[in-house]
Length: 67
Image (cartoon, rainbow, N blue to C red; front, side, top):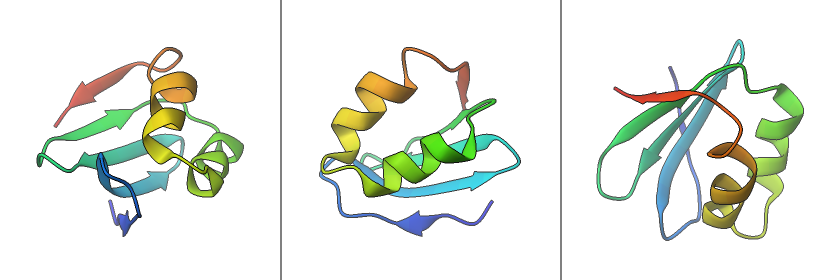
């Protein structure tokens, strides 16, 4: 999946395709979150704090795995 760099102290890059959100963290780990709607991805990109958005709007609600 193609990811785009973001301005965040915890997330290096993000990508979204067909409901799968992929996050590359600053430490190098990459996680995929499943069944994430496009508006949630858009909210992530528009968030003032990407790390906070991930912690409050993504992690509690979507299944994920490290790849």
